[in-house]
Length: 294
Image 1 (cartoon, rainbow, N blue to C red):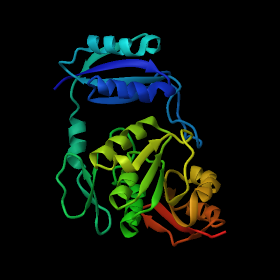
Image 2 (cartoon, rainbow, N blue to C red):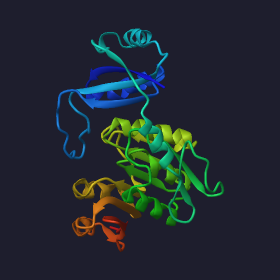
Image 3 (tube, rainbow, N blue to C red):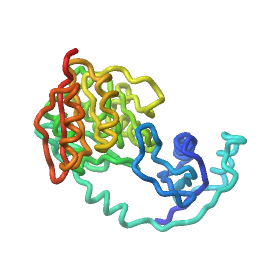
């Protein structure tokens, strides 16, 4: 089936509210493009992984009235509404359906499954995370995510306060909630990730226990468990902050680490944590540890 695209330029600060508005006005999906041929490199902590000139693309069904959508945007946004819009038809992408067909339920340990929202659970009696990753990283298929999910399966965070730093699709936050966590702060620099996390929390009926925010949007409380599936560089830089946030006796789980980087990351955290033996899947490592007292 053909679709219609509505495109307009924006800024990183406006991406999330404009994306949410498009979804409210009937968009089936929202994606982002580079509006000015600007390369993006690995972000520093606190940076937003978006282009300075970000083009927002709303995908609508073929019978949608895009003129009416634009009128509604102008009525709601006033002077803040984008000045120019472009519309064009696009054909349905067979690869999107193929990707959905190939994304099957994944078992992570003994009792935890990741189940795409369009699939029936393989084992209804297990803990099933209903997942639609949207535009954010985290389906459970990548070793970095899979390693964290296995840790959660082995150490259910029942009645614990959790931080999921670099939450992506919200997969770890939702899994923690379904495994009994009391409250989860899900943090990401990417507004797309916050949208996906909230959507997946809603799909799993755990919205009341997951708060998805940008890093500087609120002061994070201390936690019993810190989950951070990001990259080795930011993990090393964020070590002092993570140490302050994890309560004495609490645990930390780190992933997104290549096997060649594990020793450096582990050494950085040993000042504050008693580190466990590393776990490996393919070329990726998971580190975990317990916060020292004092």
